[in-house]
Image (cartoon, rainbow over all chains, first blue to last red; front, side, top):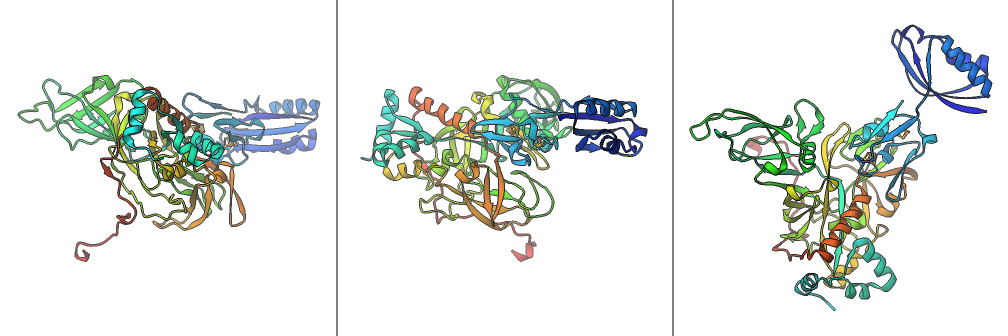
Length: 133
Length: 390
Ligand code: SF4
Ligand code: SF4
């Protein structure tokens, strides 16, 4: 079983198609929607974590592309501007999954726990965090 | 044996004073006992680096030719006070910019000045016989200014609230975003390193105390606004709620960028992290006792910011050691905690101040005037009333 994080862009007319259903039904992929911004007739964006067999994932991605979606592996990272960061720790106070924690004086980011909610980006008083989505 | 201020200053001048940070002193006292630690150590240094809204700078621009009596002053589009003499101003750090709102405010102008960046000064004047110019639009740097100094009416809060939110929506506060249903708790104090928690009864810190302000040598100028010595205290005399405060003054030109950082608190506004440190003389065992307190011995009160009234309900009392552990218990519920005051920079401040005293002969000053003590005054509320009701 492999796991990938995909950054999907839905063209405006495609946003109502049940692609996630097909991933499950036809490719036996387990989807986990981490973030989504989808509205009728507008370009949509979804951060999707997919788990499945290697081949199934490749086929599933090919299917998504055949449906007109742009599929990129999510950069899935927060970028921290260390020059701006004052290690106040406020980002750790708003990060529910505890992806950001303080270890002594140091700020530690655990990528696997991040759900890309952007709470840290909004809270950081130094504007030191950006999400690559 | 008790030491005097003069003895301690003589040792500082001779370069053989023993100086430790508050954390180092607590360790020494735990290892060797309070009595020995009190005898051996002359000065203990403290530090804190958290958002302190009540801060700002006085600036004197010098006169243009022809001169102008400045009113409606802006610096990088952030309004500054025009109600002073012709070319003096006070810029408050929480002032938002006219064009960029809270993303760039007074604090950001101050940070830009400290970083040596040029700042755009615009002003209008009424045009008088001695000040005929009516408009000016120019660029300044910190070096160009005659005087530039911090005058921060309220810094270095003696303890602060721990904030939680019992309501069912996220609140955006000066203590950061608070998740609903006690989803998180934020706190803002350097705990055992914090200046006024090390001298809880203001024995050595008062008007005229030399201190560290944003990397520059400065002074305690007065009691800070909302100074409230009458808050509830523990058995060591340490307040468990926000109590004393300091007004401080220091030369902006000597400030260091690592000890002053502009901040924008989401949904609240502009603020700034200000580095404050105070050296405390180890005069006797009594002062040594509070200097030796650790995060495990110092407590703060948890307040419910979900109740949007002046008097917020106090839900619990927790130690700074518990807060730093990452979670506290409130009514049987584990609540994750996070600081908004940087322990890393607080430590750097205490260490820098230690080297000032131990190596650079930074002498201590005995207060010219004590801060208002317990029993003298509290904080009065503002009531909404009519003229007739007075
Ligand atoms: S909130 Fe911002 S400044 Fe504070 S520790 Fe996190 S990234 Fe650094
Ligand atoms: S995006 Fe959300 S989950 Fe990820 S680090 Fe920031 S607050 Fe935590």
